[in-house]
Image (cartoon, rainbow, N blue to C red; front, side):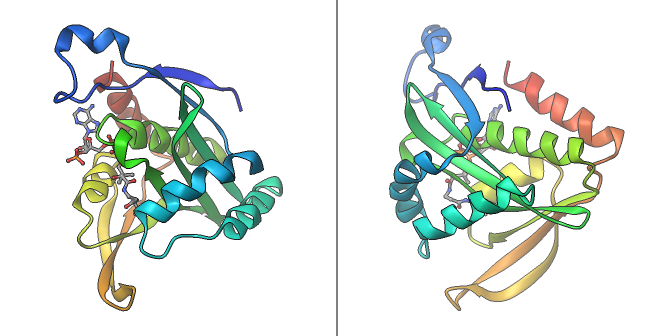
Length: 189
Ligand SMILES: CC(C)(COP(=O)(O)OP(=O)(O)OC[C@H]1O[C@@H](n2cnc3c(N)ncnc32)[C@H](O)[C@@H]1OP(=O)(O)O)[C@@H](O)C(=O)NCCC(=O)NCCS
């Protein structure tokens, strides 16, 4: 997969609008084993039950046989986010998507999810799905922009305490889905 450069939003609280054109470029590339060392501090910081490095190793092995798709986002050589898909029959499950707390609300997760969504579309997946913690409104907002809708609840799914909302996006092969992704791409320009 080719590496693509794009500019990310500057947080409105960070800089004046005059400085928007100097926001750093985000590069998105396929995840490799060498990235795991930089992923782990983020993973451990953002999740109460983080994946181990070994889980990432195994996921990357599955990617080699085409059963997964994982991406990383970097800014000036700093790994700032990552995310991935697991394929089950016709569906693509978003297994993980995380952005370093210092780099949030700049559209980085949106860029990662855009690439994952296009990938699911190109691969011919009928639907995308994921689970999200009921209290994680930021992630839910992100997914809703991509057309994911709540379809069920897994009670006490996280740490035997918080419920998971199961979200589905079932129109991945429809023209509306591509149009939605293009609309999200246009809105960042
Ligand atoms: C959820 C998560 C990945 C979002 O990452 P992010 O890079 O901050 O996400 P984005 O900047 O793309 O979008 C998030 C916000 O920007 C807003 N946004 C995105 N694109 C926008 C645009 N073009 N214009 C204005 N707002 C926009 C979104 O509505 C959202 O609002 P918020 O600031 O209230 O959260 C991040 O918070 C995270 O890593 N959380 C911990 C891990 C986690 O919970 N992962 C999800 C597991 S299901």
